[in-house]
Image (tube, rainbow over all chains, first blue to last red; front, top):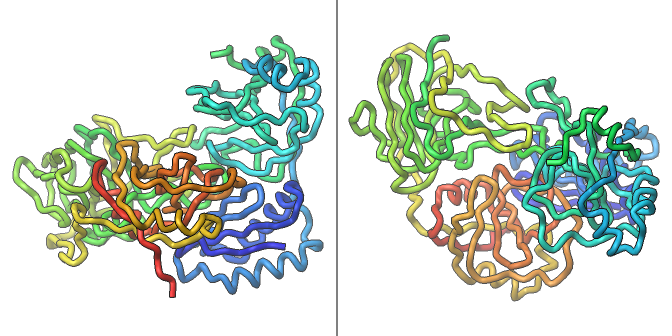
Length: 231
Length: 288
């Protein structure tokens, strides 16, 4: 099930009303690819998120709800026949030494080792990319690790910080202000220089629909993988 | 290809712009694009350039550059009391230039941003179909003093052109922003929707190409946060303090604050020429 709503003269949003966010992510990812093919050059940009897909057209004349509804219904009717887009599995090394490990332990009543086990256990799904270029919202966080965002965000979260908030995990691809709880550091880059990109190529390691598994490493591994010292 | 513009004084924030990047927002990268698309497009139209030709977006001033070619340039947008070799040049017009000519713009007297174009083919790198420069952290990279921007100027003799006066906006006048009800509009209570259009809002100094922050009657959202979703140009975001933010070209691609609707794109252009302290109001766009 879905809802299509006009947003502005040249944009519309599709809300997927299926209950489970990970199923919705798969549908949104495949729907985006389908609409991208169907409307080719008229569609200038699209933004997939947890349960929605924002569509932006090059002119109001090309943002036609009837044609969009037809394309979306057709896609959903034949969704079973569309093969799943190949989703990649990334194994991401983490040094779990974040500044907020002890505060998180206090708030959750878990030990640091339990936090590491619960956090590195699941396979996460990328449900959205945004906030910063390359910042992926990873769904699948264990229930006992879910905490509200910090009341006062940090002015600067170091590049590579692994953090959690609400039902998500994320890694800051570059230093930025941020209100998530810091659990550790990732030594590998998550965004690639724009100057090296080929046309249409993604600057990000993670794309919506990808799967991510974290692997705990030692300080020596972290240094060997080229990780930066804590800033 | 030795034709160039040498930046002497870029001012506080001068960018190379065009209509913006395409197909990059799903990577988390903003589309960008000239903030006042109306003035930008007139600048290229006066020069006979194809649409989407680069131009300089000069915010606030002062600015100075030297022309190192023979041909035409044009200036449209904010009133900066521009001078070519010390003599006034008309805003919203094209003018001929020769090597060694120096253009100077003062502080903006009215409006915020000026667009400076040259007639010809620009020799600039592109990323996602746009000339706009971006750091790897996604922020725009302004022009630096002493920089050269290269292009092949059109040499053939061409008359100076001007924008018809009906197309020149008055950015000192009152501005009502037409909002299309969308996103979470229906979930705002009737009296809160009314609050948005009843009063006047003052533009905050914390306004930029990402968004214009407005101060005035608070609009309250009665529920908790929403699921993060894609943000369209002109979206009117209502943060917990109830002070609306109109999200513009360099906005974040997704966000979790409720939005009550979207300001029409043409009005977004006019808004970006308003200065901190100026007042604006909202009105609902009648779609029938």
